[in-house]
Image 1 (cartoon, rainbow, N blue to C red):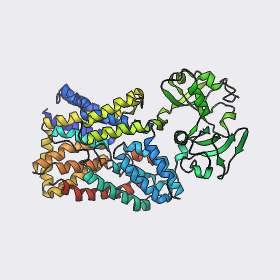
Image 2 (image 1 turned 180 degrees about the horizontal axis):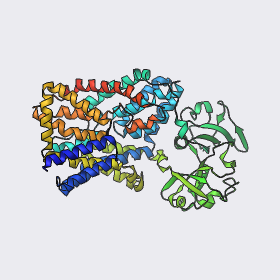
Image 3 (image 1 turned 90 degrees about the horizontal axis):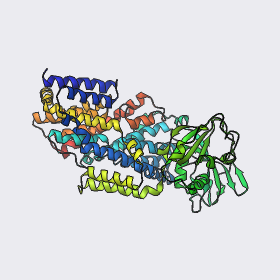
Image 4 (image 1 turned 45 degrees about the vertical axis):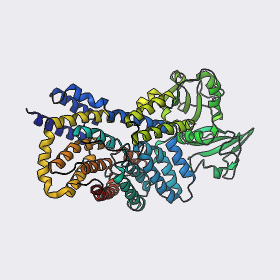
Length: 582
């Protein structure tokens, strides 16, 4: 069988598997790579070159740097700060969506959506708007922002990395902004004024899947809460925390009212979700006395972990308070909060433990691993811990790397790899968490598809397909060709990953443009924008994050996303030929 037929068979098989998802996308990509090797269409050196490419190293490093920003609480701090300054909640929601688009131009849109989801849900509640009208715009805003810079989405980086193999120059850092910024602006206007009319006004389902914990937090000297009334503290409005009791010396004030004045040294018994408790602890100047005492003890150096653990039958802790059970002395860890299905208590220190109680525990990794048979670890929540003390250094490393790469002082791949090394040296992130931050399925997909692109060109299969396409598309002219490629790319992103759709379409677009005598650049840009903007179905990771909490249906995305796709299509066709002439 001739090489062209072989690779076309592999190409069709890969398309079917990508579209049907019978296998995970990375498994399909590895299978495709194996097929190329076994048929001799590529050499081992060509096949594995993608795994060591600049694109793959840059992507892996950016995944890690985004996690560093998250662990330092930088993105979350921006959202909470904006929410605390809100006076007009509906206007603030719009400003927040613009901020989300701006942040996702430089970080993962999935991570940005995850961090801002509870903030937007809280603001929509204050504005009297159902979360269903705010959460989908949040996801879409994060996707729109990704089209502004080279690092805004993995798709942009993938296309740029694949271009040299086709004889084209890589994308500039801000090259996409010429069209990405207008698309984002017009798209946001659509989300502000059109989408709310199309979206259902449903209550959020956030509470269905998130547990409320009770925690004792002491107001430290200099805290933002000191000498302020509870109504002005932002504990409920901005952090989603309910103060159920306040201990001051030997006095306890149960269910304090909104006019209750908080003083330095007060211990607040607060109820709320894990992330909200951790966010309040890291930004409001409140501390866990148990945690402080533990840190003062010897042998507490090293990696700190945060876990959920359940109290087991037969545990010596049953029927005792944490103090009576000498919990800190016994296990060498501290309890930050407690969850009980039928909560009927108002202070953590006075709770007598029962079977099934869930404890939020923080401590040295070695101590966590040796908790014994009294407690069963239910989940590791370490990634949710925020340390704002590291925020300035985390921001400096990220901005420095992006700035040096964007302005060509050093290659972007070099800048981000050095930034990752410094993050590890300064312990902004542990090596284990750094490796865990990398989305390996995407890395495997990209590296494998780069090898496929090489084989597609080398065997002449690209020429065969582009020749056939040229005959069909030539009567449409350059505008018709751009529109057709845009529409086909958008269609492919619905059943398959955005990166795979872009890599499939790229050689076809370049070959067809060359055959018809056009500059390939505008068609490359069109495919990149089309692949990055996937709105019609909820299969994009950012959309999946809001799908459940917003109580959406599949058709909600089709109804709202189709309009946004048309807006993106129209703006792109208007601008691309003017910036990148045919």
